[in-house]
Structure formats: structure tokens, C-alpha cells
Length: 208
Image (tube, rainbow, N blue to C red; front, side):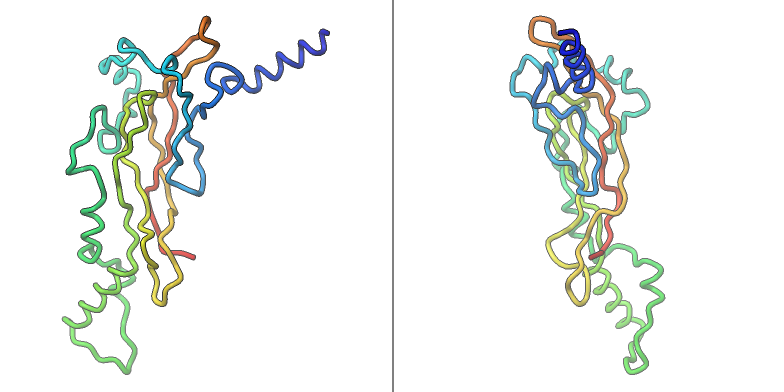
């Protein structure tokens, strides 16, 4: 009997929050090679949501401290002007040419004037560039700040000539948020805000 009790205690300590309180909850987004992060499966019971007194902005800002980044997180619903990467997508061909492309020279059989060469290079860059496209995402009431500006790589078409390569994430950064986390069962439940790291795509590259 003692051996069984010891085994059960060991399992409860190892499993932690997965074993009690929020059985459907992934505590934090798991960084992976397949960004952006997939939606977190939350426990549907509103008992695990923070109450009004737990959402005091002044207190939460103090708790998050210097990790609060207004460029990538928002407390209220962000305005439509910053809601997507549509502007970045529209400006694909207007972005500054990279140095390696500016140094590209046509073959000896192809003679181009400066203006024609510039047009060809801009056309090439417009079809091979891989910008990070941003859109605001609602993480739900159990994250603070609730809204995150998440990046994705343009994947509507091939980014190479000839076709075959696509824009894929090559670099990421992490932003720290507060996560409402509960342990225990309904009658003896303890909840608090804990810091968690959320990975975001910071650079995309044309690759196989």
C-alpha cells in the first residue's frame, strides 16, 4: 500500500497542473519549428477564468514590468490600421533592394540600361522577397495582455524562379506575457498570474 501511495504522489508531482485543475490546458505555447504557435486548447469551464478583481491593469503592468512591449501586445482591441500585414504585402515590390541583389549583373548577352536594369531587379525582388506579415491575435482572457501581434510568412505562392521554394520562418523572438494558471480542484483551487514566453516569427526566408 505504501508503494502505491508513493507512486501516486510521484505521478502527481511529475504531471503537475496536467494532473489536476485544468486537464485540457497546455500551460504555455511550446516553441517549435512550425511557427506560428497553434491555438491553445483551454478548459471550457469559466471557473478557471480570472475575475474582474484579477484584471486590474495597473497591477498587471507592474507585475509584467519591462517585458510589456506595446509594439507586439495590446490590452484592448487594437485599431484596424494596425490589425494586419496587408500594408506590408502591398509594398512587396517597393521595399529596398538587398545588397546581394543590387550587385547582380545580367549575362554578357543581355545588355540593359540603368532604368531597365532597375526595373528588372525590382520585379525579381517583388517575386522572391519573404516579408513577415503581422496580424493581431486574441489569446483570450487567460492571457495578459490579451492581444498579440503575431507574424506569419507569405505562403500564397512560390518565392523562387523557377518555382519550387516557399517562404519559411528562419528566426524567432520570444515575448513574455502573463498567464492565468489554476491548480487544484473547484473546492480547493488556487489561481495566480505567472510569466510565460510566447515565440513569434521575426524573419522569413525563401527556402526548400
